[in-house]
Image 1 (cartoon, helix red, strand yellow):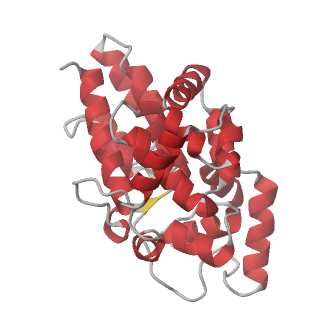
Image 2: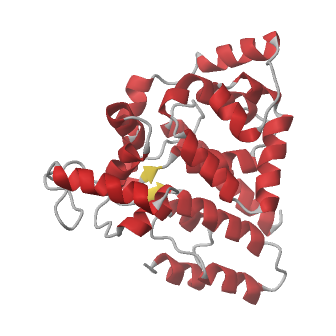
Length: 275
């Protein structure tokens, strides 16, 4: 097995753990967000769609989207997809279009990827059957802070910003928060102002009343950009070039990719400590 295949295998194992947290019954341990960090579901979707092979993913992911579309941030998903480099965006698009089960997803998802329908009766029956095996939303909100806050505050960026504020020692300004949430600076600035006005945040954008906190982000939009870099680095035959690519990675909000790189990689360890 070459290094590229090893990277894909490690990534697939990690995303199955994340999807178990989100309610898909894979036979693996779930990610404990309180110990390992918060999962951004749109970032998880983009990486999943890129890696997706002809296995249970092609039915279970459409079933999840169909069941829980009301807690998806479609604007973020569209922004992440459109901001992806061309070759990765095309690979994602090919995977989604080849897996005809995505035609059973809601129109909000279908429009993002330009899918053509309608779904056949057989596809709809398969998706309905796979949906019945998903965990309930009542259970999911106990394991996912983002999903819980979206039920509380809606599927816009307000809910996701409130989730990020639960990260211990976050210390990000409005521009950095906008980048990690993949939205406009003005959107985050307005929400921060609202949260300060109502007394949820102090002048330093910290929670006035400490609630449950999390150690960081297990998988975020930073994970998406890092994963693209990792895949690109596999094209280098020279180890020195691969190490140089690792030097550009920032793992502060990305435990997912930090776990993918080799534990004995000194450049990766240095990157993990960068702000």
